[in-house]
Length: 161
Image 1 (cartoon, helix red, strand yellow):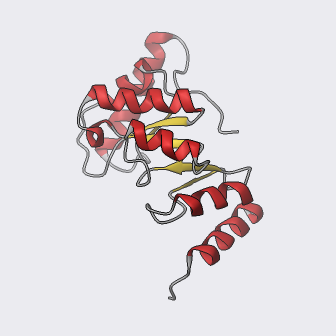
Image 2 (spheres, rainbow, N blue to C red):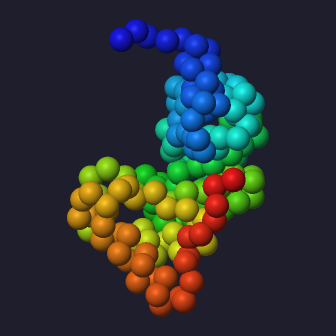
C-alpha cells in the first residue's frame, strides 16, 4: 500500500466513477479539505458527493460546505448532532442550500427504530442504516416497511439522480 496525495486520490476516484456505475461517494477527501471535495464534484458531476466528517450534522458546516460547492448531499446523524432540534436544523440547512439530506444511523446502533420515524417524519428522501446483515439494521428496515404499509406508499422513494 502507498499513500496518495489528495490530487492523485481524487483522480483515482474520478476514474472509478467514470468506469463503474458509482452514484454516490461519501467523504471523498480529508475532512478538513473542502477544496478537494469541490474538485471531485467538478470532475465527477454524475456522482453525488456526500459530506459526513466534513459537516458532522452541523447546520453551519452544511451551509459552508454547500457554499464552497464541496457537497451536494449530507448525512444527518441525530445522535451526532446532540439534540433532535440540532439534527432537524441540519436537515433544514440541507434543504435551504440545495443539498440532498440522508438521515443516517451510526455504528454501534441498537434495535431502536426511532431513526426510521425521524427520516419519514422529516421528509428525508433517503436513509442510511446499513445492509440487513445484523439485527439492529434489520429492525430499522422492518420499521420502514411497517411505516410504508401504514402510509400506503413508500416513504423514501427519491431516485439518486
